[in-house]
Image (cartoon, rainbow, N blue to C red; front, side, top):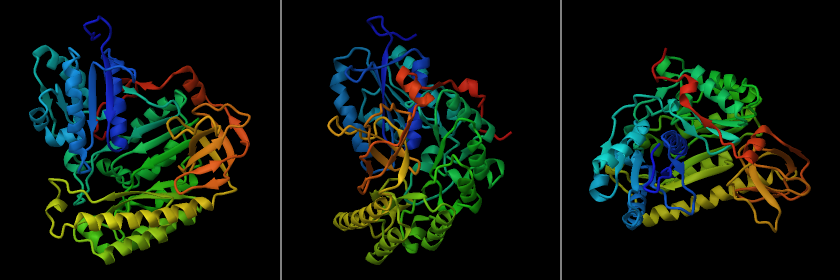
Length: 483
């Protein structure tokens, strides 16, 4: 066990930026640290080791990291033996530059060697010098690593890592590598282990989940995996993120519609409604195909909630191109959208394209997009007033104050619901059925007395403080190679 100068176990803290993949990676980092004898620091204490798990997608990612590193320098100066580690996509991109710009950093590790972190920390302590280790390709699938899950009721399950697409705005493929798929049996083993701990909901995770199976030659593998996951006894909700429209097939829609515990929720990035911009982005589909997928999804699942990602201000985007994006937003009737102003990333083809748009043009279009998205999502939410929803009670979903007596959770379609607790005492992980009384653009309210409250094993686990800790060695997941 690694110890501090006081003789107590050394403490750690993980700070996470970026996508769901980064959140899941941070659970692995926490599991590794605890397996190595570290103890999670309380929020009020300075940790002996601070790990930054970074993102490189947005333009301000660098500034955010180096700003936080700067704030930590005087803290480290006053804290003998403190170490700082930087991992994730920005570490993979910047490598040794991080130590050059912030020489008080002790360890830099990449997206392919998370498992090396405890050894690198010990080596840096022993040598009193920074350790930088960046692998160029994945050697061991991350799910072989121990995990400290953050939730007793919901868990991420990675089905693939990396990406084979070549979107001109995206730096992820160069940082996470080509797609590597896990075998279905390995995925199901992890799901079953989570359910045995009380987990009710899993999200299947990948950079492009519906291309799953490319490595072992089965283009219908993802639909089969959805059906198989749906057969795990005790699992109540299955979600997935994110699919790519170019790979979206009818068998996946059928699997969603026909598997009772697969939620009728789809997050499918649009990026732009203009065919010309989609071509420049190398998105390999056009607006008509995108809307056609949505039409098929709603024909099979009329209650489906569809969300998306949209980029405004891509190089060369004209006013006509932007108007086409607004048209698709209105036609698609999204339940929500993550909207972004185009961010130039060094190393991507889009960064060197001509016709980079002025900031003021991008900002004005972004504000107009936000207004249309809000109108659409509000209308979709208003249609649910009076409907009964099943809510999985959650932690950290914007709990209301004591005056209102509300808690929060997610409906089966992924919508955020603030609900009245009149007469019940639900715990995170419990299930509540309630009636929607009010709709806002980004959430629903249920102000009446709940219709039903079901206590669950996930709620029991939360009440006892048992977060699932999955040791990868028990799951039998030694490699990413197909059998």
